[in-house]
Length: 382
Image (cartoon, rainbow, N blue to C red; front, side, top):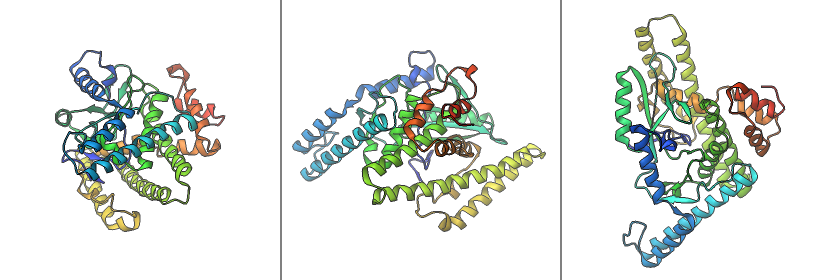
């Protein structure tokens, strides 16, 4: 677990939020126009992956890097080789995602943007202080959503201050990608060159799932489905490319086990608070008890760390200003009832058939709950 700056945390998952409003850049409103202008600026700077390879090769020959700075020739050659491997990996993941999994064929992740930071946007989430009632924003096209993204971190901090004045718990996090749901060609960003193969596969498959299946007003369903397909898709990709006995495949499992242990801990804490919030105590008493429960959980986390985790990636939890908004994010992305994992097992563990069934879900409200529709499409009871 790491901070990329003093004001937000990169969540220990491949958190990829739709940066809401960007896809509606032609709509009125200061927020939409500001984010849309920035997004269009990024898209305008995007270069095709083929051009990226040519540019890197030319820079290596000239001894320059992408910023035009002079490099040691050996460094330039190494950078060009790193870029080549990155491009080939992305292209291979895209082929796997569309050919083997059945995600929508598109021009997503065929272009590249150079950035000077290791995240794409700062995303704000909020919740009531004495319950897990999410604060929502309403946007054109996508409807009500429980997060709001900003390309400028200062704007995210301003939004946080406004929400805190409304007596809400607020969390600001960095995201490394988002889906524009087919409105634009989603590009790759320079910091992704450092991602492992499984992380890159998870991210791309997660976002391509959003571009393939998106039900307006069903954010919980959308995010849980994308989280599951991204994770399982990455596992299948790593198995097919490296083998189940490979170091790469085993390293992915070690990371996944730690991540699941962290999610389990967070959900246990949230469940404890749920009991508190459902009780008859007055609000001030609930807030005091909430603080005590969270502090006790931090102490317990530190005391049990060695028995729960195999790496140091999640140390630092006790230093976080944990609140309902932070905890609710995990309830949003990770289904507590294992609905999708259960359907996957019962339907025969065929991810392409799983995605094909998801594509049949009707976006019309009259069609009913998307979970029920999905189960029926798989020939199963919900």
